[in-house]
View (cartoon, helix red, strand yellow):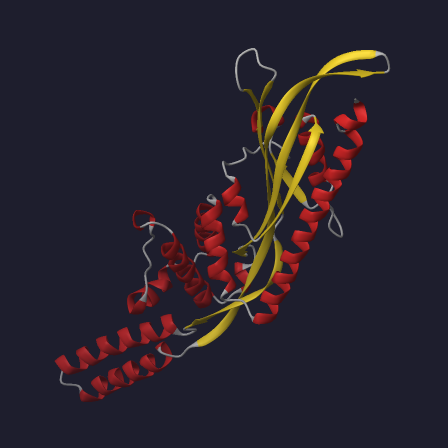
Amino acid sequence: MSGKGEVPEYSRQDLRKSTRFVEGDYKGINPREFYRRLKRRLEEVQTANDFKYETRGVQDRDLQIKSEQVGEKTGRVDGRLAAESDWEFIGNGSLEYRPYGPHGALGILVGVLVTLAGGLSNEMAIAGVGILGVLVGGYYYFQTDTHGFPVVRKDAIRVLITGEVSERTIEDDDERRTDIFANMSVIYAGDTFVNVYSDNLDELPWTFREELLRQVKRWHNKIVVQDQRLEVNDGFLAHLSSWSNRSLEGDRQTLESIQQALNESFDVRLEYTDELLEQLPSDVQDELSEQQDALRGELEDLAEEMDVYVEREGLEQTA
């Protein structure tokens, strides 16, 4: 539900590192009304079939107005608001894998055992069969192929509000009242994240699914600090042990757990996105770049609409 999630801390410098950002300056507006209007405007952004964003931010918690000195009628305003879209399919990445790695590893193991048994019993024919098994198993073990895996994206918007607040007395229709108004600088930042889509793992060959999990762990380990790295079972023994670990639900839970941990930090999410983008074909990367430009358009529209709102409802119009 919108508004319940706590907005993480971030600075103006953090937002200027975003994929796209737009800045706006607003004068003479009640910051609480501005925050409510901005949140409602984000929730009204629509895609073809539905509303696009779910917001995070509560006015009482994420919009802070602090007096500079006790008894003074001036102060500072600091507010944060965030919004994220749902995951949406954008294309397929590709990885190289060994489609018959487990089969070849098992063939090599059986061949070695048969060869040893034949050698110990002086049965050269049996030993020859074992050697043939090793050769055939080795052939299949080293075969490689490429396969695609689905990638999904989501857009995220972060807003930072900073400025000065003053208390003013205004007259409206022969009524005199006291209200607060702010001169604020607002930065709207947008980023796009990508993840491996986990819902259709059942459509992937199980040998590729195992390699995909290993690769996600490698990406994870490349990004996080050393004491958070995961063990990656690779090589001959990993392929051999795959026969005892073919649980679809287990693989899905592992993938979702890893990506959930990566998505907890905004900066880590961006690094993971960069790793995944390298696996996407150029046409999908171009399409994603166009979508990021569209995200910038959303930010510009948002800033312009809030500017119109401030011009209509601000201090100069109510004084």
